[in-house]
Length: 228
Image (cartoon, rainbow, N blue to C red; front, side):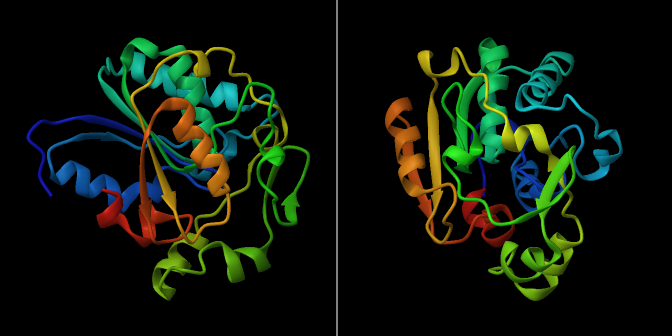
């Protein structure tokens, strides 16, 4: 893979994940000469020790906006997957002047006031008042079912619970949908959530390009070449 011009990518993970999930894609983009950031959001993965009340979609979005500011990033391609799509939307609201393109990879892009539960039928979960996540049985039998065994084990070992407010509270997106964003939606055909109807709505409202990958919900692991 090669690119005539280098770009800056910020890859934002979804629920139960961390920046680790983007490793195969980041390696390919960097090998092609691009600059790539894969931040782990507050309370997730290696930052799970910072879990506390008050971590929301909005605080996650503000984290990403701060990253853009303190790293002096501009003309950024923002990429969000799963619930990371919500975070990307808010970060774009806060840093519109720094954004060149928005890419949603099998991602949620909610309306102001919507909750994840309004779009996604989530399976039974484990957790407490601060965080929620898949049960051990769900991780073993469903979450990464389409990955080959060694990769499936590697990913399962890195799953962490996600700040509960992100999963349960309505998002605050007062300006995202009223602005114009060069955008692309990448739909994973073998994934059931977010539903295809939700992702097509995102594409229609943003006049975004549409692409499909014949894989499950974690294309950065199952189809990194095609996604890159």
